[in-house]
Amino acid sequence: MFRGEDEMSRRTVKAMIRALLYSSAFAIVFPASAAVILSPQAVVSNSAGDFGAGFTIANTIDGSGLPAFTSGVTDFDDYLASNPLHSFNPGTEWFSPENGVRTSTIIYDLGGSYLITKMALWNEDAGGLTDVTVSGCSDSVCSSATTLLSLTALTDNADTANYPADVLDISDFTTSYVRLVVNGPQNAARWNGLAMGEVAFAFAAAVPEPGTLALLGLGLAGLAVGRRRKQ
Image (cartoon, rainbow, N blue to C red):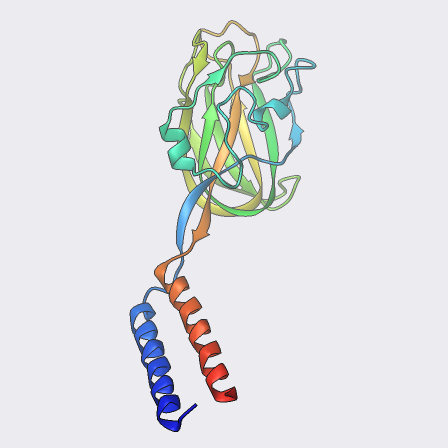
């Protein structure tokens, strides 16, 4: 390679680097975020218990009875905007024993530490819940809890065969465990106990910004400089 061509190549690479630095000077400071739907990975405890096989608390986190979504991938706002209805079918909902139980403390394991921002709760139609208090927990037994929401008026879905979600804004909080304290049933309930369809959360997931692409460009430019020097 001639000296003049080598000098021209170096100048071109330097110009690329300056342009990328200028365009990304402010874009790379903070990543953007999107709300992604998250199903808890496990139920740690449920103080009210289950009615029996086919009506267990595990049904509230497995997506049964709902149009399909992928936990950790599907956009939370887009999915809920489609008004996904939960169907009333055995094996898709949780029922507590029909013994007049009026409250339950439920602890969910999210399967990792997540910044959660919203919660969707599909309130079952035969029994249902009247209210819910949501807390983030320090550990699996919730030895220390931070209240994220206390709602006293969940939607009454009595006799609604396919029922929508209550989408609840909760205080943004990073946690691995979430506790729900729920009460019920609804006034027009046909079940003398508690019942719930599904619960899911929104967590903030980083997405690429122009600054990320600019950094990639800088890396490629650096490789180009290295190759020129070797030649």
